[in-house]
Length: 156
Image (cartoon, rainbow, N blue to C red; front, side):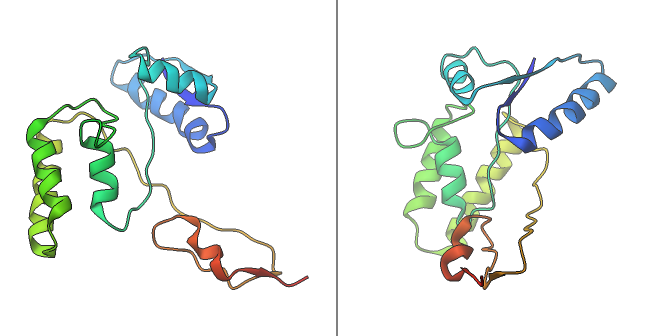
């Protein structure tokens, strides 16, 4: 079973495509949509079948890697990697102020994830904004977050 979450449009749109791609390689899955609370509860209690989640473009790699891959309580380790070596590297990367040194640490984390694939990155969704002509001074923030609303106003 490949689960999607009610109200998460991207998940609902891509689930049939993922299921079809899996079928092409001999893996049959059903698509099921559940409420967010059910999804979280099942994930926490290791009852979640095939699942996925998303993250945006983070301006600093610490925001992505520490949260998603460091073991609790410091991080969430959403994929249950439980990798003490990765924890040590992430701690060093987080505490370094040297950009070149930090890059080396995050490059190493990426190598580790490639060699021990606990997840499969599928795609990065495009950020498309459609708005009425009376919406003024909106600027899309590079992170994908809604910081661009800071100076936005309505001309009506």
